[in-house]
Length: 191
Length: 117
Image 1 (cartoon, each protein chain N blue to C red):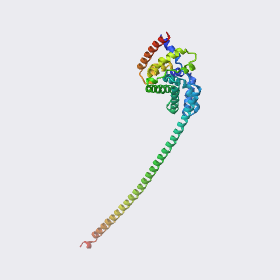
Image 2 (image 1 turned 45 degrees about the vertical axis):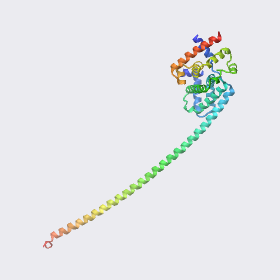
Image 3 (image 1 turned 90 degrees about the horizontal axis):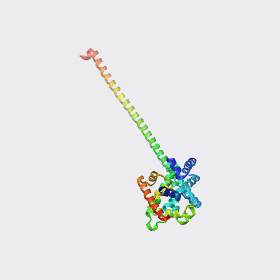
Image 4 (image 1 turned 90 degrees about the vertical axis):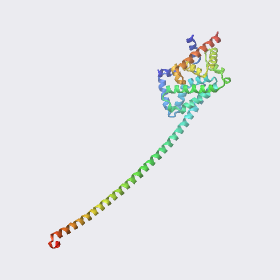
């Protein structure tokens, strides 16, 4: 179950997991190439969470830098690559939620800035991207984190609860309420 | 409908990669920080080692001094005991001599009939 979770969350197969566990051991000994390998393996997940939580590329980049620097200082406490994935998601979401709680409503940015959507969304429907982005931006920081961990990271409610230090019932109620809101919003947007 | 919106969300929220330039910057900063942490923890470890060595040496020295003092005290106690034994033997010897002299003088007075008259 735990291994399957790691496979889903970072899209890696068994051999690359072994490889990343080896890299983690080398990174703990201070090898720069091993630290680089770990950052490259997890950067998509951390960057996407930060970007979609904070809604602006420059804020996301600052957060990602801080998270990976914190990672390099705490490698001795991290046991496996799977543990590292959990730790990175937890630190990223908690720090993003803290930032969002300290922002005023006026400062809230849209979920994805325009150039980012056109640069990185590839062949995905830009209208749908924008609509979903705006709808997700209206959610509370906690609800947004729950939705991202569920649909971006593909975690189940129990793992989301562990990551965000919430009860499973709170996670499930966030998921239900957010899906209802998105469904209503998308119906209005696309009809 | 529920599955439809969920699959749309999964599609829309596929992880995206940052620019290569940004990744390189992050790697450079994280590895530099890790190296500084390793230096600091190495320095701290060697300082800890020095402290532990100092404490161990002090403990050894204190134990040595204590052992030496205890040995000296035991020698002094032994000498004192020996002196006391010798003194006791000397006193006993004197008492025995005295008793012998007394017995001897009494027995000689009993053996001589004129001595009693």
